[in-house]
Length: 118
Image 1 (cartoon, one colour):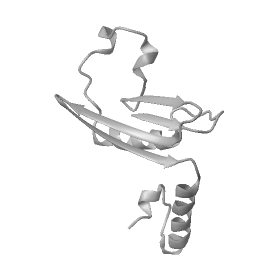
Image 2 (cartoon, one colour):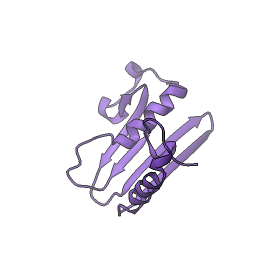
Image 3 (cartoon, one colour):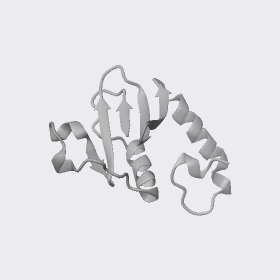
Image 4 (tube, rainbow, N blue to C red):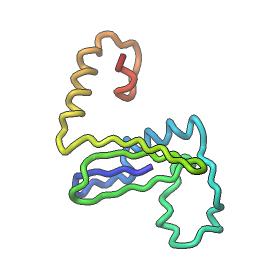
């Protein structure tokens, strides 16, 4: 799992989006580690942080836009799912507008845009 953010000075690493995705993935299944951590060679920092049992890498670099990438692997195969939001707030505005239009139909607390989408 990797997350990027374009804002200089952004202090969360990984982002809230990545933390939420990791939480949901770890609720389904904790990844199997095929090499024990104490048997790995190289700097510990290069392995990423473990968040809810999932390895996470967070990058804060100028020029990167807001993005999240999840990489799943098995023997001889890999599945990569990536989302790039672009450099503007438009995707977030559209999601906010959708939630505002539907708020009168909600009962109770909603968390996450996915909970208001049909």
